[in-house]
Image 1 (cartoon, rainbow, N blue to C red):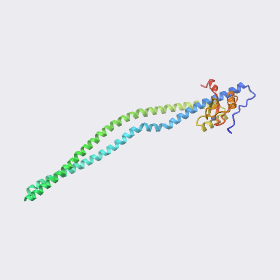
Image 2 (tube, rainbow, N blue to C red; image 1 turned 90 degrees about the horizontal axis):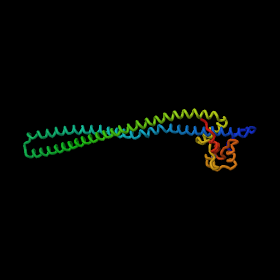
Image 3 (cartoon, helix red, strand yellow; image 1 turned 135 degrees about the vertical axis):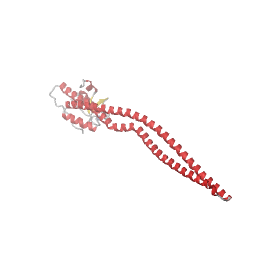
Image 4 (cartoon, rainbow, N blue to C red; image 1 turned 30 degrees about the vertical axis):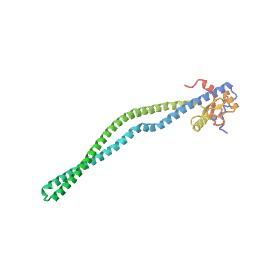
Length: 263
Ligand SMILES: [Zn+2]
């Protein structure tokens, strides 16, 4: 059993007056629902706006994160290069010292050992030198990658600026529209009889904004269930406001929309 139907209770009056009353109340409700649905939609869009902004910012953030990693790598590579350069200087120095000992040698055996020592020191120096060159190359490559990524970040920033400005404008526009809609919604709501408005508001909350439903081909436009023919006939007659036997939405028919609407 649903909530009690709104009884106009004006049996004494002319049927036409009753029909007019029911019709106008229905029209207000239909209009109210149009406003409310748009209000719901705007509120939903407003809720989603920060998320959209985040999505717009994501590509830029991703590039900036990669850039940070590359810069950190760059710092570490420069440190490694400097340390290799220091190591090279030390090794060059010791090679020089070994070579200078040549005059101190007396025997052929000592001389052979000395040559071997020089060869070892030179090999070590060459290996360190190779390492320095490799570090220099890696530093250079990394700097090139940073430059490329910085260019990409510049482009991404431009896109973000345009998109976020567009979003902000959209949000501001929605806010303005919402203010206008709420003012109009309030005006229409004041035209609806208090108990009917309370019932509408209850249904609105329960039915996600859809409190009023059109009868189409004998079915409720809200829950899509087939209505008893007797009920459909009553809705068509329009002596009183009827609700769906299943979802309890307030029912109307296409001809209720044809009468001039509020402006
Ligand atoms: Zn229904």
